[in-house]
Length: 252
Ligand SMILES: C[S@@+](CC[C@H](N)C(=O)[O-])C[C@H]1O[C@@H](n2cnc3c(N)ncnc32)[C@H](O)[C@@H]1O
Image 1: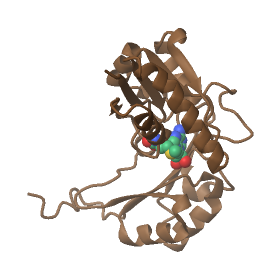
Image 2 (image 1 turned 180 degrees about the vertical axis):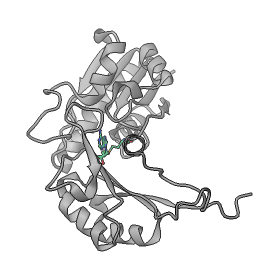
Image 3 (image 1 turned 45 degrees about the horizontal axis):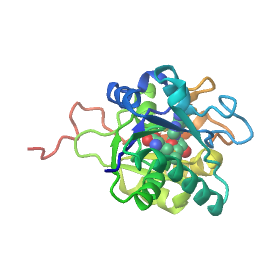
Image 4 (image 1 turned 60 degrees about the vertical axis):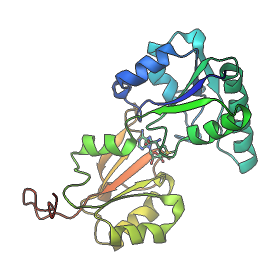
């Protein structure tokens, strides 16, 4: 009987965002896998490599002997596939012996997470493995909280657009949705902000980078110059008339 792989969301950076459920699962696991590097700031490690952000959150709560680092250097497609294969093999060794492997990941494990690809790999290696996830606080939730931004109310629609999907997708989201969140746009921030400015929505937009880390920055997007680290999130809030419950239409 094969074991269990759990993807554990540990939040975007602030160690206090680790949930009680995540803590229990990490403490009960036979082995806790953490990404050794992430792509937060190429050429600049926060913290100094090889300790990744997930490990920083997890390390105070887990016996170091049970923590195992996995390297995920995001280079080309072949390197990526190799990283997933190596991670899958390391986890296979635990779950094929009937153990529980926890994979700690930044934010939520079901939102643009390496965990998805690792779990896919492990499923191919160990078809009867049990796979589950523990939700984590996402970067967009942290930025909303820290900047005092309401993400949605009433009948408002919320879109999450990864910048690599293209500028046109962001333009369409800004036309079609109320609140729009942009992920993975930090290194192209001037272009991202141009699109938001063209849509006439820059004034209300908020930007946060390296949230929960020592070099965190957040504030009005309109006053942010230049590029930002990969770990950057932008929220363009819905336009509201300021009336309480003004968007509560037809809710039963
Ligand atoms: C690969 S995705 C991971 C998303 C993550 N699983 C989540 O639930 O938020 C990476 C993107 O998440 C956002 N992100 C993650 N951590 C962040 C942080 N500490 N500060 C700002 N943005 C962050 C950025 O948009 C970044 O480009």
